[in-house]
Image (cartoon, rainbow, N blue to C red):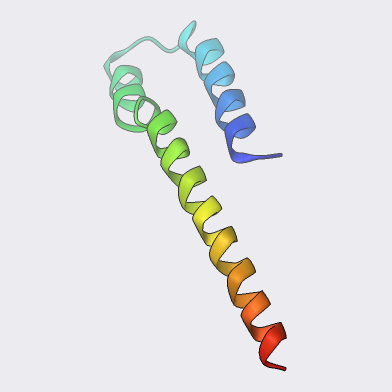
Amino acid sequence: MNLIQTARELSEHWHATKTSWRDAKALEFEKRYLEPLPGLVTKTGAVMNELEVLLKKIRKDCEQSH
């Protein structure tokens, strides 16, 4: 399962939870942790892609030096 799919599932579970948890703490939880999540997932995905490219380059450079 990838990060985007997991975030979607969390969102679906949260929407189901909101039907029974509707107090100030629920709103605080949503604002603090869930609202920033899509942006964080996007940034994390971009960084993971950059790391993948870098690791491939390192692996290639190491293979060429042997």
